Image (cartoon, rainbow, N blue to C red; front, top):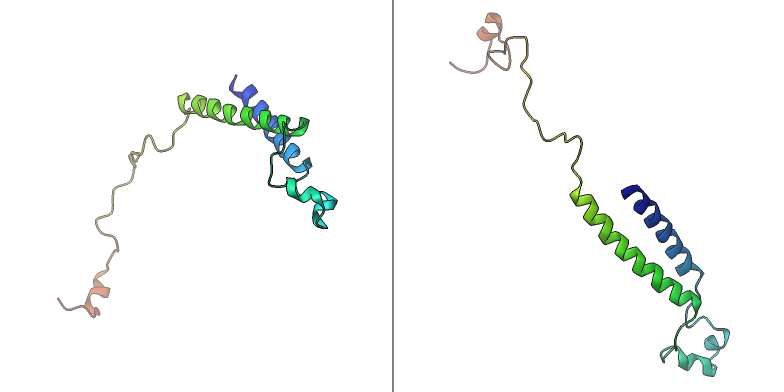
Length: 115
């Protein structure tokens, strides 16, 4: 079920991107760039909207609903492997070192650090 919704989500996202890129802006008419009367409708009411506007609205609504549904399904899933769950160090077969840096007796005589 989750994989099917994920594929539908991807298709809706690509369709939404395509519909937005194909649409023409409100002020993209040739007359509006030369000061014709059509430029007054840029900031006015645009009416009911055409097929592309309605399709974009429906795709955006489906996109947001699928986002919420997929988000809720994702939070309900249990991760199969969690690398942070068990942080214990496995026991080693070698003996631990007594100090960080091994010191030989010869190095101790020529040390600059006072005793």
